[in-house]
Image 1 (cartoon, rainbow over the protein chains, first blue to last red):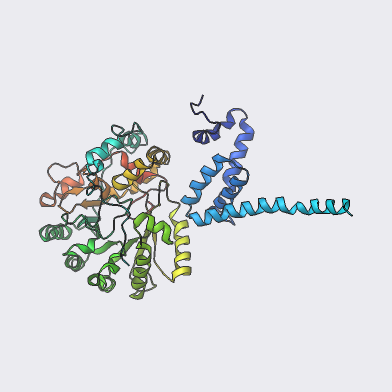
Image 2 (cartoon, each protein chain N blue to C red):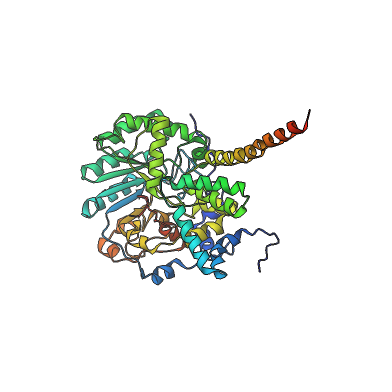
Length: 113
Length: 357
């Protein structure tokens, strides 16, 4: 048992690999795939880390935010790049909310004289 | 532009970490924090490394003084403008030249500091080394070129003697660079790099080599050298029209001012754990302590620059000083290891020449 009183314990991130304890086959496939995803490819590892950081904010995963903040720094990103990535995520999330207002407007206009 | 220092030397602050014994106690879990990590010597034995023995000395690295016009937050030398006393004398430099001349395997002289150019004998020493046909490397902080008119001809001097210039530039923007090295450092570094480019450094077919050194601006490890080199080359060219040859990535060593910073910010344990977790036995063969001898401003001998800063002299009681230099005894020595050695064996490895190939 953790002696940390909060639900999120940063030290638990190191135990992520232990999820194979309860389901080995699926867990192993996940980690193999995960490793492949983050290899250098058409996108650089730095670009992938910045995408991961942005997504981590939208899914609001504190483990991922810690992990990919470190990874972004290690891969040579600076604070400006990292904050821009988070703004991209926030813009899409904000935009996704606002674009649905078209549906609201459509409905209001249909119901109104 | 005058540099505004962001930190002062541990010595000038009478900080307890200016005592190297205290640093070693911290690293070995006996002081300040309870953190204990696997013993590095035992780790090398587990991995078949055992006792580390040197290869023939190829690089004669000499720290000719701790005086520096900068006072960087991470400096493992604890150098700064206040370190005026610790300067290598002409007599010691002459003795170094005798050794450099006598030992055939030494092909390069790596001059470091502080800002080595601030030693009054620097130019003479470079000239004498080149007369001996040795390759000379100068660990230049760049801003010294802009610091005072008496240093403004350094690019021409370097070019005349084909000095291999190795310069720290932690990042290609102002904020990250100045946070580590002092306000105004980035601007002066860019100006100095342009001057070096103007005399041919970093340009094709000139034979004038300008390498940059990247070290992380905090408690994290550097990425692969080739990735960062590509990024630095692209950005320095795009933003400033600057060219250079190679980028060396160096891991921050948990000693001296960086150790102080780690402890002050609560990053020490996690950083040490990161180094331990990234331990890579493949790096043992290429560690710089295998082919380098490090000499302090007062003439003592060390396996590497980091051991020098922890005052861990070579384990050869009869040959610990340049005045007692015994190449046979030194060749047979065991390299002195301690917990900070995790810094050189993490990931792809780290040395004064960057990543270990």
